[in-house]
View: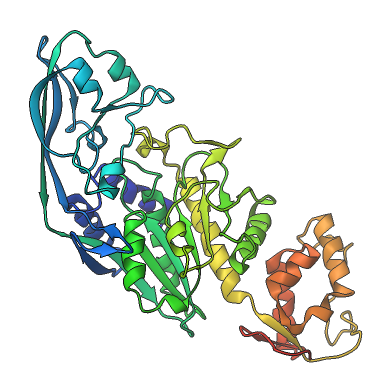
Length: 447
């Protein structure tokens, strides 16, 4: 198992790379990640259009700075941080006055010490312009009465956008998709934290025999998912999915629901949150944050997609979002480990979530010594809360009606408000005594 310290080290090694859509740094990051998982790479050429999204050129930054001609001071330099120059800015060299320069500056008054992320050019390769990003504090220190020398040297050339993927085959072709995006230069949480945690999850999955197949995708936000899906011949196999990012922001772990909000993976994730934490902070679709789940939920694709993240408190997004303050100082190993555990638990739950087929009729005596499966709500040795014991007690006097081949374990657990693992363990014991049969497929008729 990849440790939280190893996850943090990967983030530390990669977050300051200039991870624009097509560039040497992005390729470097993919090569780096291939040391941990044998990723396959699909390539999409510059200029090609997928669902009307145009793949941009390969982008290389050579130089980007602003010099105060009065003092000779370099006031902003991309060498200090990759976010100082907006991705896919065009080259420019010239002497301009403050008012003209201001039109090409980007800052954030909400986070005055943070360099903001300006990202529009990479999604709109037909726009030819440049932006220099600086903190609001830096902006306020600019002299308004002098001229500035600006030099931006960038190279645009034909290349290929690379989308990494790994398919872990299961017993069936029905596939659960794990997606995260690797772009967003100089930032930890917006993308990269999700990549690393999902990478750790996949490392565990490939060690196991699974019922479902699992597709892990590392994409460029939106456009990478668009290119991959538009060319995929396996969309019919994609049954549900999970996107993750913003996993180490200091906030509680949160669930964002799918488009419909009541799909199987929504309910399973909500149950896992309740079992893990005793709470489930849940957002409706894209009310937490909107990412690649939008592509998978789009018309004609319509794969139910949830997201797991730490994005908002009191409906306010974490302060460092889309600034250079979203850096390695934010990384908390316990939060990375917790996110890993929740995603891993969700997958294990789905894998173990069988339809239950009853092999008996009538009101059975669970306390009979030949069966010995009765759970007494007054038993102090049972590791459940009083409320959970009472809920499980109610299940034992009615819940077996749902062992009809039409209800999953998770559905029954949620009906009775009992932990999934507790009910699963009981049912597995009943299976050993030939009292029930377990299948991943649903019965079409009553028993």
